[in-house]
Figure 1 (tube, rainbow, N blue to C red):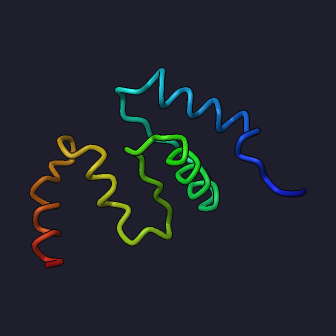
Figure 2 (figure 1 turned 120 degrees about the vertical axis):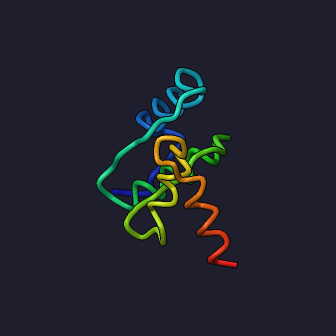
Length: 89
């Protein structure tokens, strides 16, 4: 298959355009089946300058925490995150 060139990835280009220009002020969730794809998208989108993203897969130590950060008001998670921070310290 050869070396994958992210600079020629049209789907990545389209996702970046969507997130950076069309949905720049919105929260967006992108689902994918494979953890490798999560890592690839997170790395390449960060490399292109998107810094408010998080890649989460089954390998993540606490995916629920990321969900709470994504939507704290609807999850009433401010108190939960505070409890987690206090417990960890």
